Length: 226
Ligand SMILES: [Mn+2]
Image (cartoon, rainbow, N blue to C red):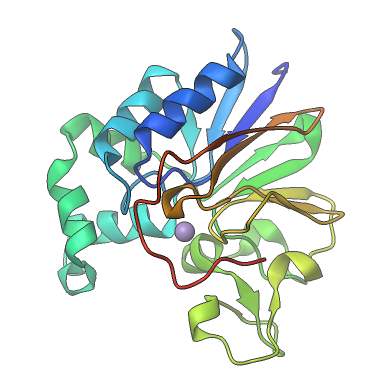
């Protein structure tokens, strides 16, 4: 059984901030490190971020950004790639691609009865039976219980985390908050580093938060969740 698990929120190519965070965390032998997905795109150096993750032996979840790149690479989804994607796509090394191909949709830590996922889960359904598209991109839930991104959502939709009843406890990224977002059964760790916010980590079992500030904003965002 691992002594500790360290989960790290969405890095989006912010390699310098990731290096600074790791200095603060100073992982010990035996620690498991879980990246919450969206390691790439929008920030300055996606390839370096993945290289760091390999160096530290981190496991990683698949974010919607990695999923889009992988689908493009495997076939017919080129239409879906924008300039930001294309810059990342052409910067990745064969070892980076191999790392992305091993990303998982969910990671369950039995010892802490905790699930790690990039986007989240539609409430009211078993977490282990939800589709790749949903778990990598859900933000809000409509009145019928369907998950979607907030940019697609009609007014009155609620964030999925407000409706999620555990166990298990869920630690997720993908929805940027101005600080770590806690409910009884969830913790959101995307604190918008690439938009000039914070890069956040949590250490289990004690749920201690460790953060560094972004050196600057690297990408414009429509708005942050409060
Ligand atoms: Mn995302």
